[in-house]
Picture: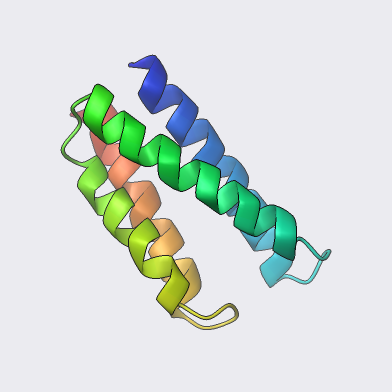
Length: 93
């Protein structure tokens, strides 16, 4: 596995966990979640370019749509899961 892919996936999973905790109202992570989102987006683009994993286009596309997806709607977690699928497909392929 490419180190770029590993870093991107790790950050993505961390952000998913923070987002899940926020969704379940286990804490207030707004500022941290948004800062981590920016880091996740940059790492996903870096992994797409440097690891040359085409499946990450799914992930980057989902991340690009997140600003339009309001929290606590069905679209927000759906984009998170579909974006994770991009990473999982990149691992398999």
